[in-house]
Amino acid sequence: MMLKKYALNAIVVLCAFAKAYTQELPAVILSKEQAVTTMLDNNFGIQIANNQVAIAKNNTSILNGDFLPSLTGNAGTNFDRSDSTTDFGGALDANGNPRPDNVINAAETTRYNASINLDYTLFDGLGRHYNFKQLKEQYNLSQLQARETIENTMLQLFSVYYEVARLEENVGVLENALQISKERAIRASYQFEYGQANKLQVLNAQVDITTDSINVLNARQNLRNAQRDLNVVLNQNLEDNIVADTTVVFISTLLIDSYIEKATQNNVRLLQAERDMAISDYQIKGAKALFLPTVGLTGSYGWNRSNNPASAFFPSTTATSSSLAVGASLRWDIFDGGRAITGLKNAKIVLDSQELTKKRLEQEVARDIANAKGNYSNAVAIYDLQEQNVLTNQDNFTRSQERLKLGQITSVEFRQAQLNLLNAQVTKNAAKYTAKLAELQVLQLTGQLLNVDF
Image (tube, rainbow, N blue to C red):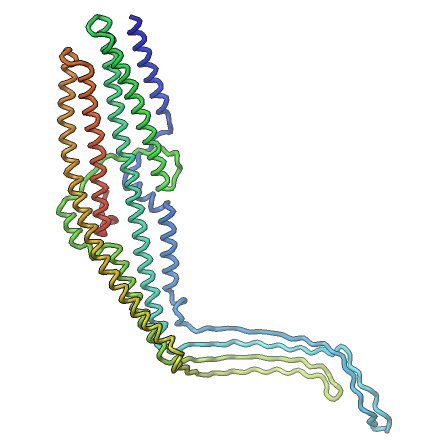
């Protein structure tokens, strides 16, 4: 009776400890679609990438293309204050008397001027035309770079999201194992009380409860850590208790194969390489523009006013004038020391390097897709085997459970059957999400990651 009481008290303490450990914030179910939407809205990396796209878009405006004239305004004023004395050197006035010195103090002179100047380039050898096309290609490239950032972040998101889902399922499996161990401990204590079991069976059951309780606590802690990792990717409160959707649906093999056939048209790295080549091509054309003349128009309108004080010989005056000027200019750098020729040669070399880079990328992408497809097929096959393995171990465990009740096997043999089932379930959970992540890798390489439902 004392042993039975001790066993029951131990079970109650372990259960209370496990229950108290789980009292946390209310869980929030987060679907895959909601996770993606939250990531797109909140993730810092994606926000920065979107800002880069916005800058590139602003650069494609006609206001940044040198197609519009420049208009400048100038204005100024000058003020001069002076004292003067004029000595007539003994000259006589009309009455025959020496003329006195003419003294002017605080004579003020003011001048005002204003002008508007217009400059417009009619033709610059098409340099600004190709520069504007470069800016548009830079915008296209920035969009592809933002897309790559989103794809990489989405892979990171689902890597953490499915880790949360896997740990959720593991917690459920371990909690079920703990419940079975509790029931076995209670049954063993009653059997011992009535002389149907020995003390060793009761002690083994208690040891298994302790082991299973520790496993549950560790699994729950790992789950909370993974939930915080997910909150970081989503840029939300770290302590939000997120529950992931554990449903996994795989895309058909035929659809995967169709994506692979069009991979060269949709892979983001290859598309970026094409944009780099287009930019280099426009740089070559822009370099050729340096060999052509530049024709421009100029125009100006000016206004001037000056207020002059009286002098020894003249009264004070005010002068106002305005002017309008229009002109044309032609500039042709016949020889600039060879800089234009060097720039053109370098631009052609850059384009050649871009072409080589694209060919290298095509090989790398083809290899990565082949590897990813093989990894995906292998992961799915392993998952199918693990599902069958769980069914086999479940059947074995059920039979062992019945035989334990009949006293046909020992508690150690039953525990081994329980552990075999537990390991099979945990391994199957890992295989399921490994296969799904392998599928997402194939989708990214084929350029379809943002085009499918999860």
